[in-house]
Image (cartoon, rainbow, N blue to C red):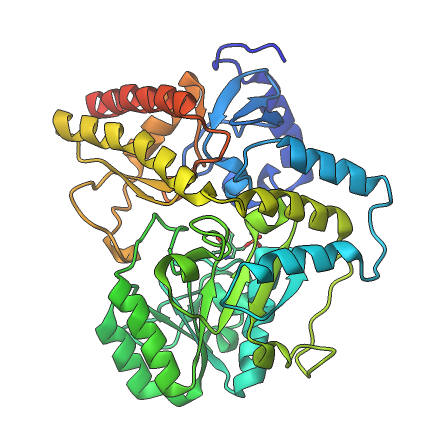
Length: 437
Ligand SMILES: Cc1ncc(COP(=O)(O)O)c(C=O)c1O
């Protein structure tokens, strides 16, 4: 494909104008609309390796990676091959297939934290189903979530903190009844005191505590290991299920996700994104005993017309087979560190209040660099610097997720050379940011 300089977005603009007549806000998922950075959302046409090309022919080094699923980069030859091979036999049967067994075996053979898994079609669906399972298993109704963690758009999790600590939640979206929101308690992250206060009052009513063990939807709010261990301890003490939502961290920081990275045993886990190799797959898993409560074995109902879809299973098998190879995660982390360290060094030398926070191959651009931020309330809500950086990087041919709260992802296709080039562009863009403010 011919590559033009990243200035003209005429075709994207035309497509967006048309899309606005077709879809609410012109998009099929809100953050794609560029609301928080302004400008025209770019309509992508093609991806290969670490690059994507928009409809105007501009090339970008992609750090969004479809919001995380593409850990091997775009159009990995093995994933492509396996999808095409499988599709030749038909797209869907609505019956069990051998491919579901293959993906299930691949995952469970390398994941000591769960005995059984159920495939669904998105992260939201996985979380929604696992919450029902937690309630069905424990016979309790309330759930605890943390402020700043995102778990998809199911009703009981579109909830923000009410007034005061450990109070019942209030809905954060129109259309979510307050009576649903009241079943969710919202706590600040990394805060043992708030946790203990909540448990003192509500422990016997709580089915599960759900957390992104690596919170990566509202900045990258790395938790202290002691806090995660305390969660484990308190859940065990009170008969509450510890629910790790690993839709981002699963297969990203280690094959078995944050549970493996931190060596903490959750009771319930959800996966999404990477598990489907770029196609729509989610999953939830737990011990044999807990999963025995899912229909048709048990009484917690959950089903899906396209669950375990063969083409999506095939993509997942091809991608996870690469992730399962020796040294895959060590290499991902080493390349990501080598990318980030010179940028942080540069920012420090220049006196910029900026730091790239990193874990595994996830990073976040923190424009409050002097602080270690572990809870949502600590994030500076002024995203103006990010906005300038974002557009400067687009001009230079680097694509980030279009919001300062979003994290970036490094894929296997981001070679050290590509990362070094992108790193230099980020340093130049930082100069522009700090010259402009
Ligand atoms: C931690 C977490 N859970 C759940 C979801 C929802 O997944 P999906 O967008 O596939 O419904 C997301 C999506 O970003 C997520 O990051």
